[in-house]
Each structure stands twice: as C-alpha cells, then as structure tokens.
Length: 187
Image (cartoon, rainbow, N blue to C red; front, side):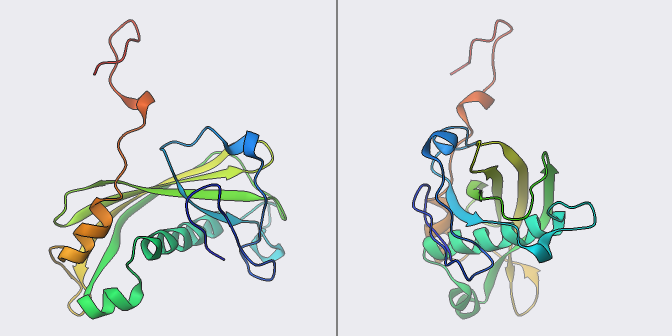
C-alpha cells in the first residue's frame, strides 16, 4: 500500500491506493525536487464528485497518507509520536489544483521535506502526476510545527525528529535559484 522513493511503488489492488506500473518515460523527469517519496494512487468511484472528476478533498487525504508513509520510511511512526509526546502538526496547508483526474487513472503522488529549522518548524511539498503522460495535476505545501501532543502547544522537536527529518530535507530545485537579468543562474 505504501512505497519508497520513485520508482519502487507498490500497493495491493484491493486497497484504496491502487497498484500502478508507472511509465518510466513519463515520470523519469519532471519532479519538482529530486528523489520523491512516492505513493501510487488511483481515484475510485467514491472519490468522484458531481463534476465527474476526483474531489479535491481526496487529494488532501492522499497527501496525508503519503506524508505518513514518508515519516514511517524515515523511522518515525504514530507509536513514536505517542511515546515522545510530540507530533508534527499542519499549521498551514495550501494546494494548487492544476488539472483534473478521473476514475481509474493511474497517478503518483510524490512528497519531500523541503525546509526545517531543526527546532520547531518544517515544510513539506507534494506533487501529483499522471502516469500516462507525466502531467502534474496538483502541487501542495504544508507548513508544519512540532507540538506537545498532550497539551497541544508548540514544543521543540525531540532529537529523534531532528535526526530523522532534518537529514531528509532536500534543497531548492535547480530552476528556482535566482537568476541575472540575462537568465544566467547565480551560484
């Protein structure tokens, strides 16, 4: 049901997250950041809204699922959160819905940790792509804050969070670096 970094993606066909075989050509490039942690998904009949495409709330649910999958892959699961009495909570979430998806389409949702101060805050990004042609359907961004679960208040990340999450933070994509007026990228 969950997977590691692209292209090793697996899911059971009976799960809501359907197994797909991504086209290497369509998904070999075009990711916003390097080495995404990926989850294969496919809209089911109950995911389709009155406009005959995948309801946006389904994308949000998939982002939560791939975020947890990534955290588990990094060595922190819900039991660790409870034991440490800490959690990374979404302070702000934003999504850009670029193109629709439809029932049965093979999709891949990638995620990355793209920032973190090693104390209280982290940023997670998402990119949903269609397997058949590699088109990006949605991009998302979460601003996360570490909280004390029992009190619900912001608290410093425990060493286990810093060790797992900070090591996974990826840098800015190459095409987002500042450029000179002629288009030449600055170092």
